[in-house]
Length: 391
Image 1 (tube, rainbow, N blue to C red):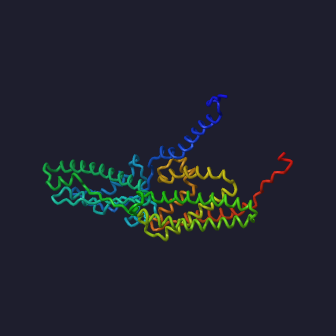
Image 2: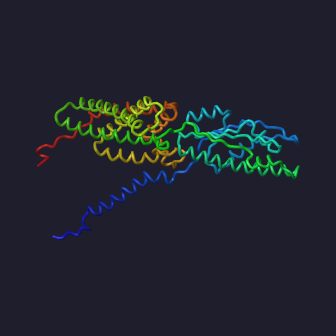
Image 3: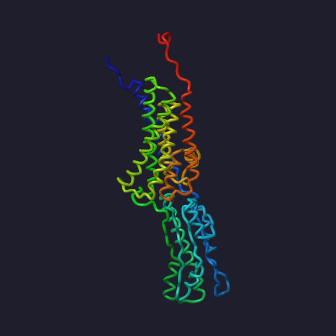
């Protein structure tokens, strides 16, 4: 008998499934990126400029003028943090408080005043950007500051030319050349990401590999433990053996991952031992978290963990200041993959400093999940079907 294919329910179920997949993964992978925009990026501003006396007796304080201009530019997606010294600004960068710093030197006003003489000595402004904190944002901050300084330089040149024109019709050639660029700007990268680090995305890649590797281990040991229970093994002993075996496998996997990253791919790693120890903590937390879900939910937990992975990846790849509020508050704030990626960034690019919060979160997650996973032996078991119920 001929059957009309279009009348089969599976055809329409498949069409609905395709739409559902597109919507879910579209929200996960395109949603955060589509709404991403830099806003309130923390940058340190240091004003060291010393005001100087002008020939007419007035004070010239270019540093304060620039400070007002920069802090009042609401169109810049920068949140200025005023600090008292260059050392304090660099320390803040080391602690990952700032994406960069702008240093206005002590001779800024004096250098600008010298442009009216035959021996101009323009001052040099310094820009520092932290590539390790986020390479993409570092490039954005560097570009924003360079463009802002260019605009300010043009404004100062115009003002100086107007002021000089009031007193003389002739400008020395050297002064005229200096007026085109009233100050110079140098840019320096701090905490560079190093060679073969995927342009600073190595922490994200290592986080992905650890999550998927631990997921494979968790699923395999979960299925093996089910078979062992059916074969008549002690439930508690099997659970504890599974946890120990999983942690041993994770220990070897993290060591292999560090070795592979450096030896196979030439990834520049400042401290391989510290990196391995952190990956061991991260992998243990991932394995215990995944195992706990499998112990209490069963195989339906697998699609949940896959969805968590796909929803988390685009979010942790961006700076929190660039995320839409919904993604930042409802996913970035709690996903365990974020804590691992952030910790890896600190270990790989900041010598493992400022990580107390990360260690606490992963430590507590590991401990709680271990207890909850072991407690799954107390979960009520489904009653075996009786002869009457099967008839």
